[in-house]
Image (cartoon, rainbow, N blue to C red; front, side, top):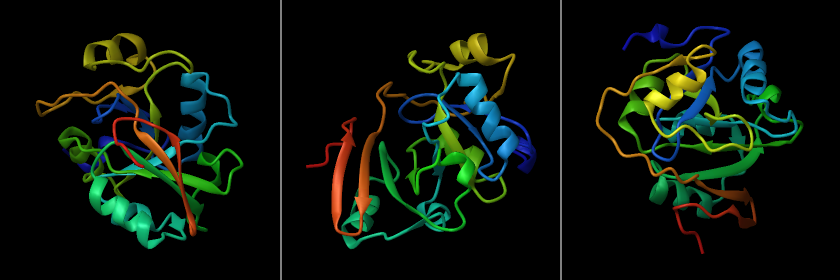
Length: 187
């Protein structure tokens, strides 16, 4: 796959290990705005950053505790989203006014093939659906519902999607708090 998989102003639909996603380059304010419009998403709800490698994501956050690092080592790649304080490199347009951002490394070869071939290796993302509706279940549904609005990336490798959202954990320097329980169990 060539580096031109996603261009400035473009939004793509793609497969992850949990649900189908919608994403753009994180520093592309025009494309971030398109995501909110396409989903009819409330601007008070942030996007998250995803990559095939946690090291690409770490520059966008600060205050990674030893325990949070252990969670990354154990569950990345996987269905876990960790929320940290933003670094000064995190684009404000994806944070919806918060000083935090979620990061995740999906366990999906198709997603990996996308992010390893884009500059920076990171996408600003959310689920591929209209807000308050279920995410798309497969490529055909993604094309049917969103093919006229975004570039849908056809999966190249066989995979299985859980159709269950990721577990979301708020990580402060002194506390870990589960905000949404998904398939990864954090106790």
